[in-house]
Length: 248
Image 1 (tube, rainbow, N blue to C red):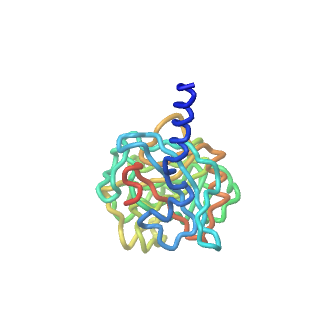
Image 2: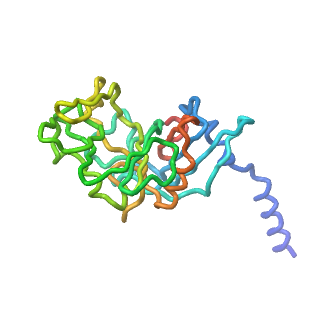
Image 3: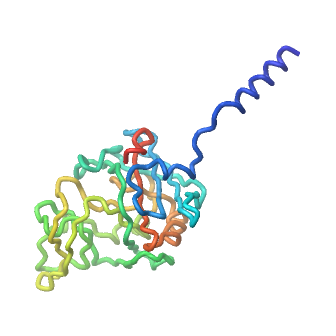
């Protein structure tokens, strides 16, 4: 009887412990959500972790945030995490911070997203040549003989048919004032990205392990997210280890 009474007391104690904040309330606690009505939250286990969880939230007409899908498993950079402001190229670190989501691409056809979507082929690259700041961290539609960026320092997107079946561009270290240089057949930026910090950070389909700094989820989960994302809802992604998430 004494053992039964003790078990009952423990059960009551567990029930009476204050619950942790509901996951759906989390976006209200984040620092840089701004006017977004769609938020993807990527939570790492720690600064050195390569595993994370992904949750997608939508703010309803009543102002409340609700989680839209079951929590997704994700992989992050093999170098762990680093605050975006001090992240460096070729470290394999995932940048911690809050970023807008405004476009997508993929080796496969558009799965039905409302984001601007570009289907890429074997001639398409993502330039990451830190000797050429004007084209750094920009999509390039061909390897023109007159280009100023080096192929060896850029990603040939079709070389990753599994990971880049579909991808959402995470606007980390993104240049602005982008225009088409017809003479060299390449995109160039008026306001350049920081060539020290790295390029080509995407939310893409998972491969066989950790990433080079991107966030990856299963292809079915990625398609769910792509079909849900809406430019009119000003979507953002908040990415950080759990201990730093509310500051990201």
